Length: 286
Image (cartoon, rainbow, N blue to C red; front, side, top):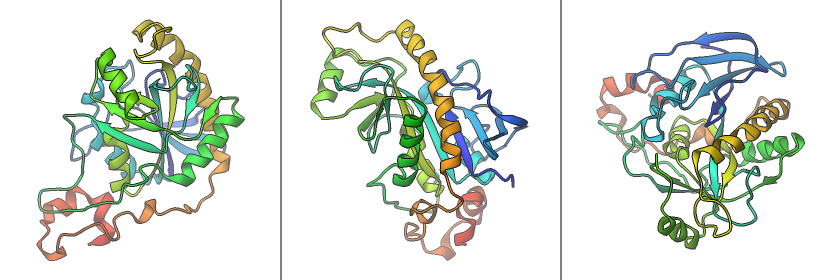
């Protein structure tokens, strides 16, 4: 067990964190294969922080190929209690402009083909997910982003699509009519796996474009995406440095007790192999 309570999962454009010192690279084997990349553990503002590039260094993994279960299991096994997810997103609202930061408070899942849960195979759990992001971590993250100089929106519904392609204009118009605020490809199933693992989870979504709905703006393309990602990457790293001192040792939320009333399977019929598979996550309940 490493003394690491906070992890950062870097999204598109954020593949490392230069501010980390006293670096240690950690390779973790999980029941779900290898994580996206080697986990780098370093010191930031006096705290040990784990960093994992979601798409792998060099951006090798498509959104549907990210080993989400391996990533969350690996971070949990290191002792992580809080995860900050850095995401690129498209804006579905005029006022959420490119290079703004959105700290979403809701999710809408429009993905199609991912592994969504650690549970199954003889162990069933039904978790509360009405509030998919940790409210306390969200507030601290928003404060840190403002201190770092970002233009921050403190709420929004984040719709997650399968990718890797961007939306058609028809899809984009329909999503807007549903009332969503930003669109991305990776917060699902990451957010729900973090909740199953009893880890606080919050997203810092950086707006890179207006998707394809905006008649007066250029449709999203990779060149536009990369230019805005590079501008957003520096803000992401400054925000994390501002965030660390804001987080106390105690978690004043229910995330760390998410499984207490969620496991419905009678304990004596759960296969021993499943308990061992989910050791870092469920051991204290068996």
